[in-house]
Length: 144
Image 1 (tube, rainbow, N blue to C red):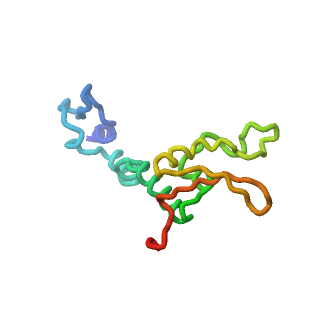
Image 2 (image 1 turned 60 degrees about the horizontal axis):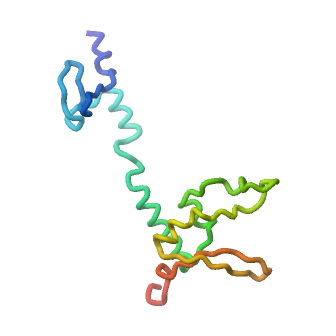
Image 3 (image 1 turned 90 degrees about the vertical axis):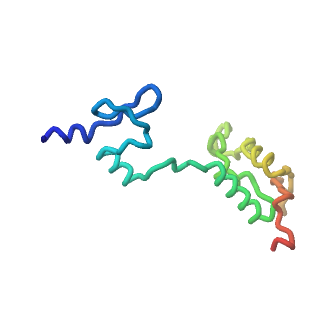
């Protein structure tokens, strides 16, 4: 009948226990239920599963790789893309908003996880900078 399209496009209904309730009233587990046309199209276009399934593990692997690439010494600016700082560097609370983000507390989880130590170093121009040293991840002659 021409009204069968209505049944194909009806979204899934779930009962109290998370089971799928089909159009005829039968209850099946979600793994056993077939997808309707719209769900199948959505699944084809966007894929199945959670794309962020192992995001935290992959993020920590990338942080470790970054530290090893830099011979065990990194700055907060290098770690920021991986550790989600709380605010933008431009929004630092100064009057003009153009200062430096001095709140580097977002680096603490990496310091704890990889055994890092903050150090203050001075460069050739005389200004000081905070760098984070990770002795356990420093590249040694045996690793190279």
